Length: 114
Length: 114
Image 1 (cartoon, rainbow over the protein chains, first blue to last red):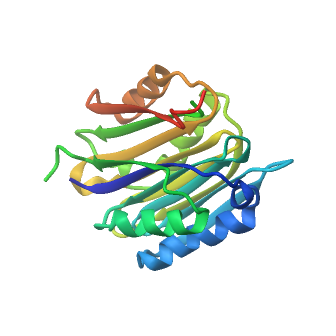
Image 2: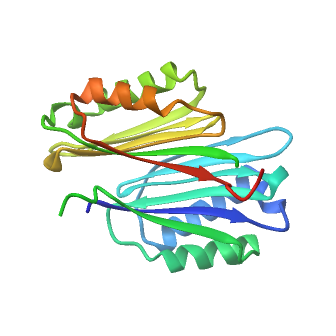
Image 3: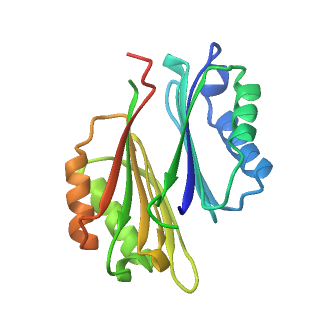
């Protein structure tokens, strides 16, 4: 097994933090720092009238977020070649977006390899 | 349902095209153009002595690749909010990396939404 891919579909009641790039950028960087991952580069885009998308390329792989405020929804991925604690990710996102409605799917990448 | 996430674990016999950023950048852009997706930005990193990682942020979400030439392995993701033909992706990757050993996982993101 090569990589740990945590796939999170987040549904919240308040879409305020899903609307703008600034909050999206903040929470991605918060996850990266809490997991002590190493940033290579990052890129974001603000959609009009609202909605944001962003990714951070990591030494360990990547983290991404795409938001749909009109559906109170965000799709978040954390992919790392080093072990990561998904409970930390869930807690950070749950606290920040004020929701417990996060559907989590953990996938092992390169699963046929040792 | 909000997004189509195609997760591909690719195993090949020849790691030549997994080693360098140039080939990785080429194939990501090829997939983007064949699927007529719209690029926002892209970022890559060359690892030493070999191995590459890259990401294209799209209007429709993202595409990423991370390679481990030492295992003849690449992890590739295509995530789009518009319908995408996964058979086109598989054919492009299969032809380029000269392998039929591609494990594909299709995930619907935001699946509890209409």
